[in-house]
Amino acid sequence: AQLGLASADKALGSVEPEYDSVEGAIRLRDFIAEDTNREALSNLELTLLAWVVSRVRASLGAHSYQLDGLAEVLGAGRIWTPHVPEIAAIKDATDAALPLRALGSRGTRPAGVFRDLAGRLVEGVAA
Image (cartoon, rainbow, N blue to C red):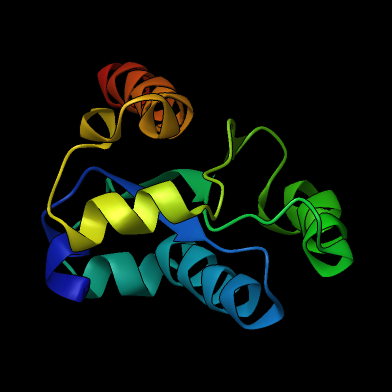
């Protein structure tokens, strides 16, 4: 992971709305923010671009709780939407090595989520 950070100008983090994942995201955020770590990587220009929230189950109260606090913990304006839902279509496409659109109507909504996030990434890297 550090080799990737050494070669990047901007990092995009992924976090799940689970306690352990949020704690890991905090560690990544703090690692990138620390000048001595960026110096050790020989990459003083490294910044944290944003966070993509994945495997979201809207029906879980624990996920709602974690989502409500992410902006405060990881930075206001750095939590990108839409969030990636945890749905069978994504797992099915991954397991079959197929694009989501190959699943027909089941893949349309999650494919749109990834399209929107990819657009945000292109904009963020260009800025």
